[in-house]
Image (cartoon, rainbow over all chains, first blue to last red):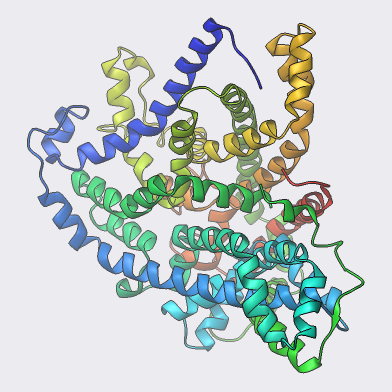
Length: 275
Length: 317
C-alpha cells in the first residue's frame, strides 16, 4: 500500500492529530462545561470545573424530559426496525426466488422510493395521519418511518437473497418445505449480515431524525429525543450549563454504543449508504 | 466485504425462479406494497396535486391552476425562493470541495496503514452518529458571539481580531453552518473513499513504487482515477443532501434563517410556508407543496442517476 518517508509519516501524524482534536475537543468542551456554573462557564470556559455540579445533569434530565425522549425514540426506532426487517425480507424473498406475473414491475415500483426524498411528501403525510387520528402519536411516526425505509431495505435484502443459490431452495422444496418454511428456516439465517445492515441503518436514521417529529408531534409526552432537546433549547436558552448537560445526556447512549461497536456501525452505515 | 452485492438487484432475474401460488405472492408482498403505497407513493402524488390548490390546512381547497408556480418562479415569493436556492447551491459547492478534497487527502494518509488508524477511524466517524439537529444546537452555543468557545479560543491564542458573531454576521453565517456540516459528515466521506482506495489491487501501487513513482504521482495518476466512480456516487449524494438541508439551519439560525434570511435554504422556506406561519408572508399548504415540487424537480434527475450508477457498478467496493 501507500508508503511514506519518515518525514512524510511525521507530517501525516501531525495533520491527522489536528483533525482528531477538532472532532474530540468540542465533545470534551460540551461535557466539561456541563458541570460548571454559568459564571464559571463564562469566566473560564476551557478550564476543568472547580466543582463537578452533577446537579446540572439532574435538572437537565428533568427539564428536558430526557427519559421520555429516550423511551419514545427507543420504542419508535425498535418497532420500525422490526417492521422493516419483516416486510422487506418477505417482499425481497418473494421477488427474488419466485416467478409470478408483475414480479419485475413490483420490484421496480418499490425501487422508485430510492429516488424520492420522503420529506417532500410531508404535507400529505401529515394530512393522512390527521385523518387517521395518528398525528401526535408514536404509531404515526412508526408508520412513516417503516414505509420510507422500505425501498432501501428491500434493495439490500434482494441483493443478498439473489446470491443464495436457487438450487438450495429447490432442494428444500423437493424435501417438502413450503414457501414460508424456506423463508424462515433457509433464507433468513443465510442473509443475517444483510439483516444487520438494514437494522443498523434504519435504527440510526430513525433515532437521528428530527423533521418528522417536528411536524407530526406536538405533545411533549410523545417527543422523541431530538424533539425533546429542541423544546428544551427553546425554553432554557440562557442557562448554558444546563443546555450542555442536556446535550451530553441526549447523545451519551449513542456515543457509548458506537464506541463499543464502532466496527459494526461503520461497516453497516458506509455500506448502507453506498450500497 | 459483501460479495453478494455484486449480483445487481436490477439484473438478477434468474430463469430458474420457482413457481408459486398467487396466495403466497399476495401474503409476502402485499404488506410492504400497501405500506409503501400509502405513505410514500400516494403522498408524493398528492403533493403534486396539492401544488395546484390554495389551502390553509383546514377548510376547502381552492383550485388555482398554475398560480402557485407563477408566484414561486416569477412573483414576490420568487425572491425568497431563489435566495434560498442559491444558498443550497453554495452549500453544495463548498461542502463538495471540502468533503471530497479533505476526504481524499485524509483517506490517502490513512491508506498507508499508520499505527492507530483503527482508533482514528472511530474518532472521525463519531460525529456521524449524532443527530444533525443536536450538532446544530451544540455548535450554535460554541459560535455564540459573547460567550461562545470559538471566540474565547481565538482571544486565548491572540487572534482576537478574527472573533466575530459567526452566525449573526451576514457574511459568515451560511459558511459557518456549512463548516459545521462538514465537521459532522467528513468522517463518512473519509471512510468511504478509504474503502475505495483499499480496494485497488496493491500490485498496481507496488509496481509504480518499483518504477520509482513519487507519492504525488501515485495519488494523482493511480489512486485518484481508480476511486473516481466512488467520487461520482458521493457527488450525487452530496447534491441530494444539499437540497435536503433543514435540521442544522433550524437549530443554528432558526426558522427565520437569519440574519436577514442569509442562511435561508429551500427546506426552511418550505417549512415556513407550509407549517411555520409565524413571520412568513406566504402561508399556504398549496404553495408549500409547490416548493416541494420545485425541490423535487431539481433532485429527481440526479436521484435516478444515482440509482442507476449504484446498480450499474460491476462490482461493489
